[in-house]
Image (cartoon, rainbow, N blue to C red; front, side, top):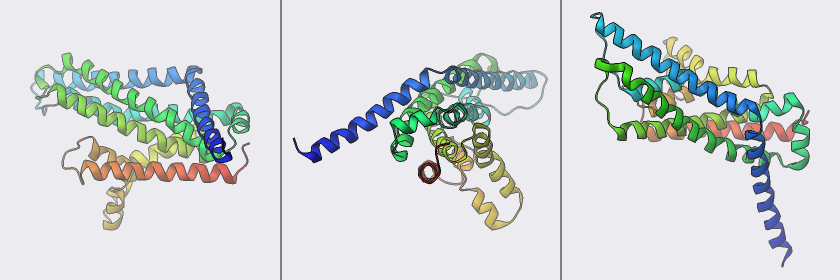
Length: 265
């Protein structure tokens, strides 16, 4: 067996071992279950409030536009659920700095790029499944409460939208993971994600300055709304996916760069 073969085997084992370790760490802490449970409760609560309010308004003679269960659930994921899922991603990285376990992690996986890649390979699929599942749960919860307000919908549309939201959740999680590697703070990471997703695009758009309004269209929050089927989207879903992946890639590259440049403590 050649040295090259042994080196390649070590590289493969190294990444697979790092992924296995990150998987165990993710599911062995209570914060993972709390984050997922809180996200589901927030989305279901949002859906129930919006659905009951819309039905009550229609019953009182107030004109309410038709809305489908998946539209209400998508709003819950975008307004509240994505931050809950981003918290899980932030804890997977920044949480290790608060506990000091990052020292042990970097001793076992000294290559910063491999470490962050292993975390992404664990977090992204988990958030994809979680985002899809909580969207379906939210849509299901809203069906009996929308009543006459419910617009036409099909199972295929619900599943397609849920999968899109799952993918969106995964990309936001990767972005949060990269930001957490740079900031080493869960609160700071969530604040940065909140700014990029909601505050900055809205602030830039409200200025009325043309180039700032154009810049707001390329923030991840705006791309997310286009991907989730907002009315009169600025660009196609393919363009929205490209923008979101670009933000995630920049965050990952920034995280790796900072991890390599800075001490672990």
